[in-house]
Each structure stands twice: as structure tokens, then as C-alpha cells.
Length: 555
Image: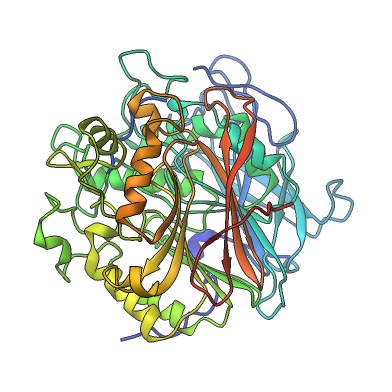
């Protein structure tokens, strides 16, 4: 069996020729220690460290392989972000059973302070659509055992694909019980993380953090980003989920800085915080080191995955290439065709993939909402203020110019391609806005109420912990937010479902007959053992381009 370095830019599949914010509460303890498979313990700088204190993970599954990840702490001084510690050799092995009686792939890799002692192995020559178990060794130490799964063969007639869908997990805002709920399920093929895996903010001075970030300052340097990634990896619920199923992830803004664009960010100040190029490079290097993604600095994060003939998943990067957000909601520049959210090359890649795809369902991992949203003028001052806190103000007015609404030319290009080529069964899967949505994508918002002409649908998961409307308003869930949701749906008839209050996760199933999403809400984001309940389910029947509420629940 073979393994290749992710630096080799191994293609995910042959590519066809191309066709010619919001602000969140900057809040969120001590690191949690636990033992067992998928659990990690926090090392100290004085005691002999647990060599595998940051757990194991896998990601980016292909029909013949998957990416494996871990981080080794070989000596007490080799702490994340320290730049210290020796170069070491870490071995790995993969087997089709958790007892490792029949190892089918194995090898060893070197790591050291130059990549913060992280390890990524691109294992190849595996069987398609198969569960595997994996582990790492350093000296006499053995890592927790992880479980992963390869994708189905390209020509396989897949009858079901099921995934967890998550975004916006702020350590300081609560505990990651949503990840534990997903890890406890036994029906997931993968987890789709749509961005804001971590947050850059420092510890708030008002003591409002449920758990405090490390480092206590806003992330700016490479050491900062490495330490913050390391802290998140010590969360026992996240560690358990990483060890349970492969992730397919993309970044949004908070992996670098709030409302990031190609040349800066809302909360990046030059020269006090250095140049944006330096800060972005630091954030992207740490992301490449600490995440189970087939990405290395200087490469591209957007990529595509196939799941037999059933589905194709295109993961977007909507931060690296985008133009700066417009300055106010009535700025005509938001319609300027020279402004872009995706970049010219990525936009061509996306449309070409949609046009030429032979898969039934075209899924798009999309970090910010693409559905057009108009915010009604009937909202109270308090409601407007809360929405401003959630999605970000433009001259004091809530307006989602950080999303596709601020880049209407790119959106029109995508929607026109879907309409003109008659592309069916297109589903955008989105995070970012800390709320749950089910929307149809109107070919023309003005005529949509008359003909319900939709070119696709969008399903938006809520936040794992990050603040939403009731948190900002300081009220109980499902009280004042109800009026805001009702007003938005009246102004936007293509928005069929909206929940501004819940924290949690979603479970998505893709089958030949339909795409189905269940939304789950945590009872208490500040409780690490919080239970969750299903609050809504929507279904997209094949060939309809429409969302329909259903009482059926994925079992």
C-alpha cells in the first residue's frame, strides 16, 4: 500500500476543461482532559507529555484513499506554537478492523517544529466505500484509534449518503456538545464543516467567556494560530467526532480574521498588527498543519469529491480571492461585474463542474449564504440592532454584504448557468450566519412569488456555539426572534424556514429520491453534556428545486 504527501497536489479526480459580517460576540477555561478512543488529555510544559494529546483525525475521503492526521508532542518543550522540540519519526497503520489483525497499509513520516509537529498522511490504494481503522505510534506510545471511510467508486450506484453538517464553533461561547451528539451516532459517512472551525478573538475583559481562549490575545502570529488550533483539538467532543468519521472542511473568515477578504479584514489593523499578507499566510499555514484537509500553503482549498453516481460535492473558498465588501447597502459597486466573491478561476471551476457533472445531486459546500435576503423596514430599533450584531452593520443597517448579496454579479453568473443549462438537483449547504434556513433560489426574485421559479435550494445549518439573535437580544429562545423571522419570510417568500435562536447541528441525507435535512438544537450550549432535540426537517424531492417541510426524521 502507498502513501503520498499532501504537498504532491494529488488530484481529487480528473478535472474537465474549464468553460469559457456580521459581528459576533467576541467571547466564548481550562482545557478538558479525558481518556479513551477519540479523547485527549492536555499536556503540561513540566510533566512528561502525552505524545498524542491532540487526538487523531481523517478527512477528504476518495474512493481509493483518505487523509490521516495527528500531532505528536515528543518532549515537554515541544508545545504548540513554540517552535521547539526535535524532529521525530511517527509511524502509522491502517486496517479494516479495529483490532488491527490485518494491516493493509503502514508507513512512517518525519515531523518537527517546522510544521508544529503535526502529521498528515495521504493514504492510497484502499478499497472504495469501506470503513477502516487507523492509529499512530511514536516510540512506545500509541495514539487513540480513529475510524474513517473511503468514498464509493465513481461508477457505484449509491443509495444513501449521510453526513453531519456544522459551522461556527466558538470555544469561548460554550461547549461543543453538538460534536458529541454527532459522534454518538452510528449512521454518518462523514462530517461537513462549513467554516469558522475556530475563532481569532482574545479573551473578553468582562469575564463573559464560558471558556477562555489560549492564547488570551487575538490571533495574529503563526504561533498564535498554532496555539489556538491546538486548544480546539483538546476539546473532548471535537476529538471524539474527529476520531469517529472523516471531515470535509473549508474555512470561512474567523480562521483568519473577521470579514476577511483578499486584501484585509474588518478587524485587522495595519501596521499595528503587521501586514495582512503576513497574517493571512500565518493563518493558512496553521490551518494546513492542523486540519485534515488536502491543502498546503500556496495551493488551493477549493476542491471536489464524488460519491458514486449519487452526488458530487464542490467545496468553495470564499475568502482568499474575494473583493473588499462594499461600504454601504446602496453602493452600486455591489453589482460591479469586476467585483468577485469567488475569484474568476474558482467561479469557472464551479460552473464547469456543475455543467459537466454526471452525478444526480450537485452539492456545494458554501461558507456564506447565496440566497438573496431583503431585511424588512418594519423591524423595531431593538430588532434592527440585534440583526446588526448578528450579520454586521453597513452604516448602522443590517445588510449581508459579506455574503453573496454583496457580490451580485458572481451570484447572477451561477444562477444563470443553473437556469440556462437546465441543471437539476443543486443544493447549496451553508453555515456562517448562526441560524437555520431552508430556502429556494429564485431565478428572478421579482417574479418568484408568481411562478416559484427556482434554480436550486439552500440549506443552512446553525452555529455550534456562536451567538445568534436571542443571545444578542438577551431574551429566552423563541420569543422576540419569532417576529423577526416572520417579517423576513414575508419580505422573502423564497425563505421557507428560519430559526434565529438555536445552537446545534444538522444531519443531511442524500438519496436518489430526495435530499433531507434535520436540524437539531442543543438545550444549553454552556453545558458540555447538553442534550439535543430535533426542531425541524425539510426535504428536497428530486427534480423539483423546492424545499418542503416534512415530519419524517432520519433514523
